Length: 175
Image 1 (cartoon, rainbow, N blue to C red):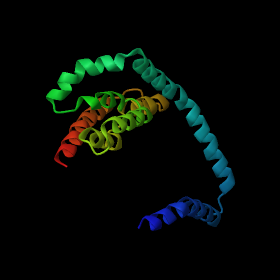
Image 2: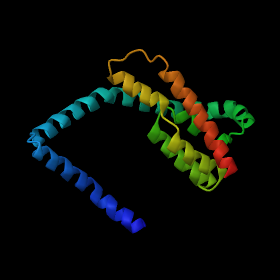
Image 3: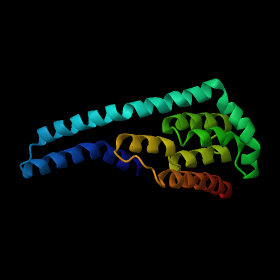
Image 4: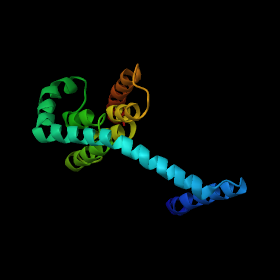
């Protein structure tokens, strides 16, 4: 099964690209010109997004370098323990809504320290795979688009994230 999936993954992208090009040629569309225009739009979008991404990464680095993350972990430890959430997950829970890549690094560190088959390692894996980077997504989408009022997006994202945390720990506890 894994060799079949491996073979499929090797050919998947080239086949999709070939299908798109053939379809475009069949419709007599200027395929190369449309590709170049799309690439130009992609670069301008990346330039618009870049300041928001840089601001998030600088904020994360400032919080972790200053020791504020450890301080928050110490203060919030009893609250999280009350809800049955292991203290080792606090830094991941606090960082995940802000940075996907930063939380991947933390999840790796958690698995190296606690083991991937431990409750903490499994819960960290589920959180990284299922919990959204709420602040990152909101900063990115609302920073680039013309929409300036978040309305219920922040509350809905945060509620979903909190439910994801509890569900991750609960599911990993019963497994």
